[in-house]
Length: 138
Image (cartoon, rainbow, N blue to C red; front, top):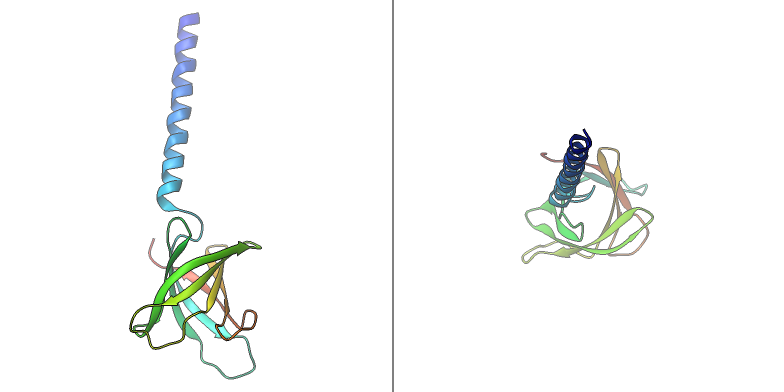
C-alpha cells in the first residue's frame, strides 16, 4: 500500500512539473500582453479639426521593438525607449523611402482587450494625440 501511495505521489509531481513547463513554454512563445499586431485611429488632442489617422503597430514577443505603419510612404521600426507607469514608450524610426516625419513616441498600455496609444510628437509636447487600438488577427 505504501509503495502504491509513493508511485501515485511521484506521478502527481511529474504531472505538475510537465504542466508548469508547458505554461512556461507557451508564455515564451506568445510573448507579453502587448505582443502582436494592433490597429486603430489616433486623433490629435487639440481644438483644431484634424482628421483621425489610421495606424498599425506590431510589437515583438519580447516587447522591445516592432514596426509601425500609417501608409506605404509613412512607416518604420519601433524601438523600446523606456517603461513607466505601465506604459511601454516606443520611438518611431523611419523606414527608407518614407516621406513623413519620424521621431514620434508611441506610449502603449493594455486596456482590457485593446491597447491605448498616447503619442508624443517629434515636435514636442506631451501626448498630443491618442487612440485605442484593437488586436488584428489572433
